[in-house]
Length: 255
Image 1 (cartoon, one colour):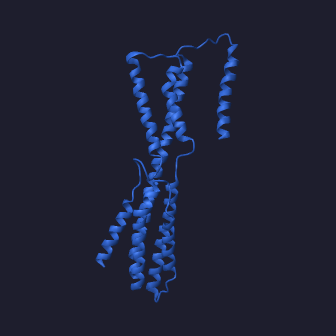
Image 2 (tube, rainbow, N blue to C red):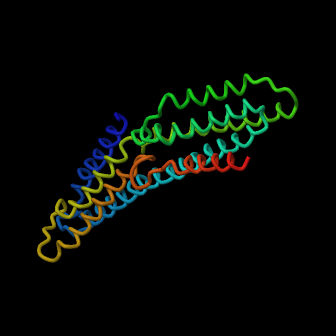
Image 3 (cartoon, one colour):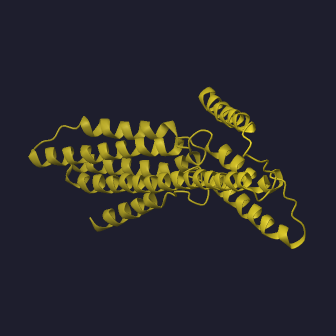
């Protein structure tokens, strides 16, 4: 934060020193016209700055949401693959592992997803998955087929664990610090700049400015509303895990 403040002070200092340096140049004239070169240059730069900051404020959450959606599909698909692989385990072990997978996925949908909208993860979720992996790891295969089945289940559970770690990071993800305040600040400056430059729009001339202010306000609100992966218009839902539960029921019914 100190570095940001110093950079702003330095930039303002450069403008002040430049203004003082050119004050003594006789060919330079006062620029008091709202449509003059100073106001036109500053207005163009403010508009460009707002567009840059606004683009970042939209693109970062958008790409984060896309990545989070892919991560949920990877985790749920790994759960389905583990469910299939568990069929080669001994009868009691197969039923135990499949029940553990159903309980875990149902827990994610029912209990964990609402917390993720608040940027949190349920601590019991990781414990459930670790307990399931521990039980599979402790199994004693009787032949090579069961050994392969155990290795396959452990592999898919490892993929689930990695995807869960990514989901944890996604739940805690947020835009870079200061990005939203900077979006608001630049949006406000773009709206009030004509008045700061000395213009006093009247009558129908003010209508485009009002429309611009409304659109900028909506854009700033949108950048705030989509800033979290698991809530808002771009929210990633638990559809992939609900699909996994349906696959569990289909696989169990077909066995």
